[in-house]
Image 1 (spheres, rainbow, N blue to C red):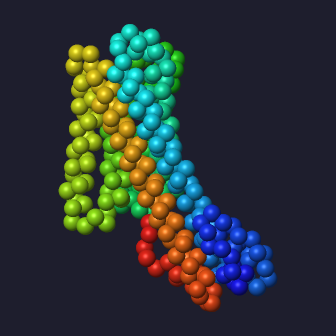
Image 2 (image 1 turned 120 degrees about the vertical axis):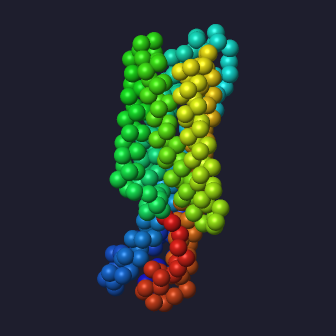
Image 3 (image 1 turned 180 degrees about the vertical axis):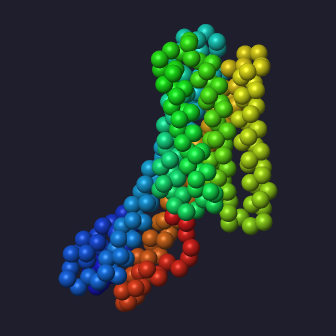
Length: 265
């Protein structure tokens, strides 16, 4: 492990530089290999979570664009009706797919929910975002109402995912967590149910419902971004702890036991 200990512990180079000379050496024990694998895994998770966070910001930006479009006059909205709906529906579908990867790479045991329930919610989220987007790609005039009904109904499941993420983010906040969970749940459900009612019963319902929709989805994108960044920082902290422990200790097991603080990865 001497070669490893002398290697620079930088976040971008540490894992790669350490694993190259040590894994192939005859003196490398199984414990050493396990340590090096864990370092490489943590560094990979740091990068993946940052990439996911950037994509969440792109989705947030798409909803800002839709808000701007929705604030334009009726003639402009009608003239650009097709590209507007394509951006609206396909960005929502892509975000639903993105949330699958967030659950896979970011959650990693940090979500205290029934895993089967979470799977069902994610399946419905994917199906009910792809179907309306595909229908509108065929014909906006024919399927516009049906597509909006499906999308607005499905945003209840999106709200459920947001609630789960907020719970994970606020878990260490102490006694206020329960109140925050209830407020977040009520706020998310209020927006989704209100926009569904506005769309069906208000005059100029589609135009008004779009404001609720894009504000909710913008908030959802920011929640997912915070969730990804929080996970990336946690992995980076744990990775640095283990690299520091490896440099300071002569024992082969020091790397595994170096990061004693619990960090959700």
